[in-house]
Structures are given as C-alpha cells and as structure tokens.
Image (cartoon, rainbow, N blue to C red; front, top):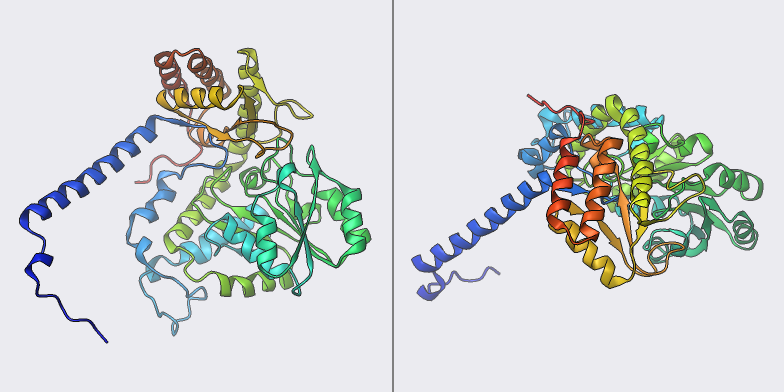
Amino acid sequence: MRGKVSTDESAIPSAVSREQHGRQLYEFARRLRDGHNRSREALSLVPSENRLSPLAQLPLQLDFHNRYFFNEDHDPDFWQFRGGESIADIETDVAHSSLSALSDAPFVNLRPVSGLSAMIVAISGMGGDPGSTIVCIEPASGGHHASAGVIERFGFVPATVSVEAGAVDIDGLRKILSSQHVSLLYLDLANSLHLLDVGAVAACLAEHSPHTLLHIDASHTLGLILGGQAPNPLDLGATSFGGSTHKTFPGPHKGVLFTRLPHVRGLIKDAQRILVSSHHFAATLALGLAAREFQHFGPAYARQVVANAKRLGAELTERGFDVARCTDGFTDNHMLWVDVGDHAATNKLAGALAEAGIRANVQTENEMPNVSGPVFRLGTNEVTFEGASETSMALIAEAFAAARDGAVDRAAKNRSQARQSFESPYFFADTE
C-alpha cells in the first residue's frame, strides 16, 4: 500500500536550505575536479592499479554507463534493452575478438565485474560437487587473502599449498592429491617477485590427478601475459586463466576468464549466468577498446614494465634503500618491495611521497611473504603505460631519496622532472 504524500510545510525545503544544499553539492563537484587534476600530475606506483587510455575511458563518460546489455547474439527478437543496440558490437565483436587473439583462447568470458567476481565464477563453476577439495595458495606465500574463504562459502573444502620463488611445493601438493578428492587447483599468486611456474604443477596433475582442473588467477600479471612478457598459462597446461583487468593490463575495473576447452567454457558460462547479472556494459566497452589498443602497444609496454621495475630496483638500491631481491635480480614482473623500517618510518615516508605527488602502496605486517613488518609494494605498470622509461626510474628514485631526507619540495621537483622525461604513451593519445 502506497504511503500518503506529506502536506506538512516543514517537510518542504526552504529557499535557504536549498541554497545550502546546492553549495554543498557544488563543493563536492569542486573537490572531485581538484582531485582529478592532481591525479593528472601525480605518479602512481601502486602495482594493483593502472589507468585507462582516453579512448577506453570514453564509454564510462557516455550514456552507455546507464544501460543494460544482454543480447550477446544480436537476436532481433531479443532486444529487451535497446540502449546499447547501436554500439553492442564493441562488446560482442571487438572485445571478444581482441581478448581471444591476445590470449590465444577461443573462449573468453568478460562478464565478471572484478577480479574477485572472476574468482567466484571460476570457483563455483569449476569446483565440482559440494564437499570437493579446492587447493589454493596460502596467503603467507603470496596467495590472495579471500580465496580460501570463497571456496568454503560455496560448500567446498579449502586446502592450501606453499610457494617459494614462484614454485609450488610439489611434494605438499602430491600429499593433498593422494588424500583428498581435489576438483580444482586455483593458483592465486598475488604477491610475488617471481612468475609462477605453471608447467611443473600441470605435470604433477597429469601424473597424479588428471581429473583435477587447473586455473591460474593472473590478476597481477595479466598484462605481462597478454603482452608476451610472461608465459601463457594455457600453453603450460592450465585449464583456464584470468583475473582482474586493471593491474598490469591497463583496462577498467572488470574481470575476464579464458579457456580453450569447450566443456570448461560451459562450466564458466553456467556459473556466470547465475552469479553475474549486470556486467557493467560501459566498463565492458572500455575493456574492448583497451584490448584493441593493447594488440598494437601491448608487447612493447609489457617489456618496458619489467625493464623499468628492474631499473627502479637498482636505482633505489644505489640510494641506500633496502629492496627485496628475487632469484634473477630485483623482480621478474612489475613489482618491487622496499623496506624502510618500522611503521613510523614507513608512514612518514609514505606521507612525504604523497605530499610530493607520488602515490605508493604500503602493505602492513604479515601481509607479504618472507617480509616482517611493513613494506612498500611498488609497481611500474601505470607510469610505464603513460610513457615512463628507464631514465624516468632514476628520477623517481631521486624523489624517494629526497622524501626520505625530508626535502619534500625537491621530491616534488624530481617527480615533475620524471613526468617530463616520459616518452610516447602506450596508447592512442588522440581520440578525435
């Protein structure tokens, strides 16, 4: 039953309150614009973030952000929502074909709305019967903190394996395979300076548990894989792979899943139909445009991301910073870990960097493998996408040193010089 419309004059905003409300809303708009403008000059060294190109950003600024789209087959009798009709091919043709070509996988599901959404679809779709065991990577080895919880909430039994220098503990995995019915191995290496050795795991499954599916959550390294800088998990024996699309891959906040196997495509699709309704149409268009650009720029970008990370590690070390090392140097991917001391010292440097216009990610105690205490978790992906070169890394390291020494103005100047050193970005800058 509908409520009555109030006739109480006190419920009607006065001219004064409307004016105050308007000023408040105007202030919100001003703050948003100011924050956006500061972001354009800042340097972001957060490994789990990237930015969209002007072209890929465009759908999020247009009416398509307001619309549903479900007619993937362009059925003329199924246009229940027509707001996306004129542009639907950017999802159904451009996004699918570009991502399929980049991944060398005929089956692409781009409906997940985030990396965790992709995780949920993959686990629920490929996990098998309730009560089956699903193996993931322990957080202490760099596994995602949510994986075991998601597995358990869907009625499966979580088990974990350790990883050292990118290598899964094969002996530990064999013990789990011999004692439990493992339906899915979900390898979710989120924090690592090494690339995951997928081939050894696939060989173990082929010998000891051929029915077990192998999924690689490549959220952090997706751009490196699609750019050819890291091995394609499908070539190494994985059943499927995927993850978020906004870390080393310069796309929107979305998720994607890839496979070459028709029956696995069906498992994923069946789960997705239940777990994802609105897939954020404008963001999906943005993903398609980002993927089409990546076909042109991706290989050079991915190579430069890793080259920049190695150079930044060396430059920071030269300036007295304690940079973690991997087997072959400072990193095999986009990520660097820098220890500057206790919480007070870390927070002080993070604040000085922020004041100078440099955004760095701090991970607190017990969040990173083989690291005690807080640590800076840095990534070169976003600045590389904007055009940063190895020369830029030396200037960024200078900014870190200046901020550490309390010279925030000098750090800001170094940051500005670093941005001025950028070369051509890895996207089409002119969208007209």
